Image (cartoon, rainbow, N blue to C red):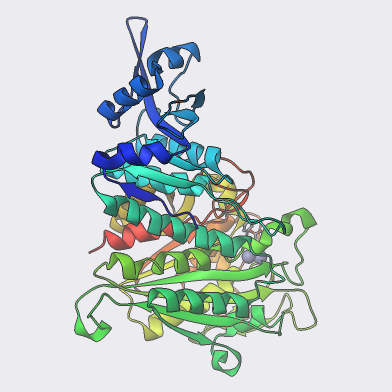
Length: 500
Ligand code: BES
Ligand code: ZN
Ligand code: ZN
């Protein structure tokens, strides 16, 4: 894990002497056909550096015809007796919006990725911006690999700030995202539901969270989880319940809100008997547990942040395999709580495991907010692309608070409509409901899935995130590696910590 270090600006000059590179943020403004460059952070220190290295950064940027676009980086070789640094990295900060600052951070992280170098950053100093920047630097530098050979080298980042907590909380968040990415990247031959439950137990132990894992006969009531997960009977499905209480406060003691987050944890989705085709679309399906991993990542930071809210995470862990014990299209199953569902397409397995989790929360946990997060439908990717997660809720106020938390953190979500004309799609002639629509005119698959889940939340305030598009990145770019992105971790942390 990367461990960034906060250094007091007063002593930063000493720390600088040992850094192998110094990153300096810049912006560009053009007025009266004259191009100006600004260095918004630590101006006096930067001035001193220019003197020490005998360079003029403005001239260097003019020479490169720098535009200041966020993420633009120029490398300038330098040398000075009392400094180890052999280069200055000039980092474009764009218009200095949160978004631009994150892009710039990610670009610097990428530049440093895989090298054991110390990089001192003089890019932004405003606390809010510094937090975003420091998180994105770490996300950009993230690597996951199963290659054997020499251990991966990791860079060390130093940030000048008079508020070290900013860097510490940035690092807690970035490490939670990295941990989530690690789980998503792990291939499904290793990552069985048992393995993932064990990882959750480890993480809960390290962070001081309560945890309980159900398997086998204890899952008798979880008809959806069993129908999907018994396709791979060894080791079979797992239900994981993780609880956070603020220090000194038990659930019964208080008036604090209780948030329950249900995560889809399909460790591999072959589609089952309704096999995924073509096979190229199956290969990424080790990431089909990204929702449960994000919920785990978020709750693992709460003992550190101590928000005044009770939180329970339910991880619905199962493999959707093709085997002699797979469910069949036409099966009727009984979900947790008793509703019967006609299963017509075994590839729509996510909603079956989530429905059990939602019904369990309603029956046992008295949630004030019931949230689920899932790589649920390919259709969500078609609807909002790979830049936004699809958010469904009937509560406008909560939708707004999540949209804002998303813009602040970079895990952006778009409020989608729960189109009631689609309720008809869930009618079944033989069961309480059907989980997919057989009819062509119901083509918004992400909406049908959301409406199905809503049938299990009774009158609770409910928010559903379909992160099929954003949970995984198909290219290595910006903050994201190819593969699991850890989407949702920053969003949930931000929302939970601003709730109280
Ligand atoms: N895990 C998939 C959804 C998915 C697709 C996630 C692409 C990430 C990328 C889900 O279980 C699924 O197969 N959904 C089907 C539903 C359909 C059968 C109604 C889909 O979206 O095609
Ligand atoms: Zn599926
Ligand atoms: Zn799936």
